[in-house]
Length: 130
Image (cartoon, rainbow, N blue to C red):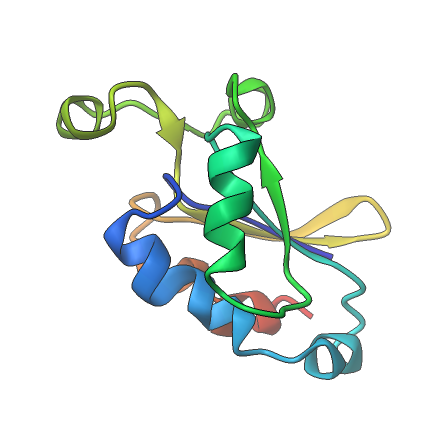
């Protein structure tokens, strides 16, 4: 499977580039790589996240809200840089992609770490994990 995280619903890069990179990959293309599920997560309430998910139309991507940052913090992926806090008000999820196979992490890219850019967390990078 693929789990990818974004800083928040309706934020510019998440809406215009990150999520569309996954939505534009068909379920059949994921299955050809052995990926059964693709999940997007962010620190948002379920109502906002669900409304945002609806803006992408019909897609095989699942959307998982992490309203209290519990999953985000447990994975060590909380993003709390001062400019972000000023804009969004509370810590969010770092932009990342994780490839999972039978419960094991087979790939992990985190934007801003180890020379990785936002593009290293988009669907093209996720496809390379498999």
